[in-house]
Length: 164
Length: 164
Image 1 (tube, rainbow over the protein chains, first blue to last red):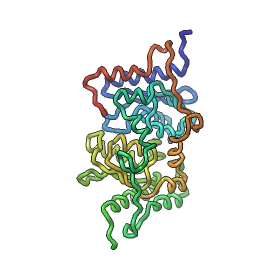
Image 2: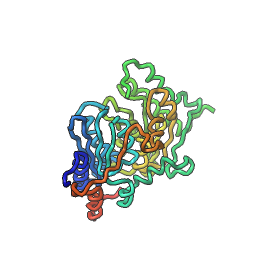
Image 3: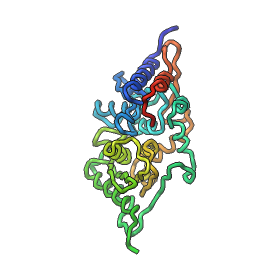
Image 4: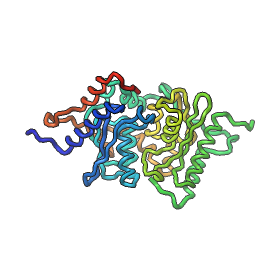
């Protein structure tokens, strides 16, 4: 059988976007958001091109889809990506509420190419005191006359808020 | 002693941004990137306002700082945020290479206010087969005539690439 599945076609498309992006000042990553009814929204890595460390392919595809569909919720959509989403992109997919993610290369392929996807996955499982980047809870003293709860108190008080 | 530390002042500023943002159609989160020489770049949550599920306060502060400083690398900067960064924002901080993160409220405060920060942290430690959102590796068949390695091969071949 020499036919490809629909899924392979989407992955091939993401891979093709990734490869072309390398020759257009971008990183070697491409992604597609596909809606339940088959509409496609592309994204490619523009971290160095746009001076935006969050401009990963999957994030760009999610932003693109949301912008064009006029929503912050991609329930029912699938994210196809040339490479396993890093923790940033996995989190973006979670917040966007996509139905699932399908990827071709994995974090170890990315690592071999010099990217920190695997390192950052490990960061999540590293004890706080051993982390390369400290992330510290700093409760405010009385002198500050505010607390971290203040924004949530405001949020609770606004009946017209848009939850997400 | 009724004085506040510099750190408390930055956190208070992030909290103030967060609270004001609630009354401007945004989520209850605010953040600041502070450079080693004290320049400040703000960010507030615009997820629902901008139809961008990645427009978290910390991400917005990082994008803002990078855009204005003309770089994708915030080495030496500190991220101050009204609430513990969610996995998206923690990852963005890692990719941006900030020196550290300091926060006021934590993921449990966010959870009480209805946000999924803690849920998504747990997602990272949930076995693949039990996850609410499937993330699946799909190697391509020979019929696809490409593989996930193709973009990395292209990347390796480009001498003028910009690593990050």
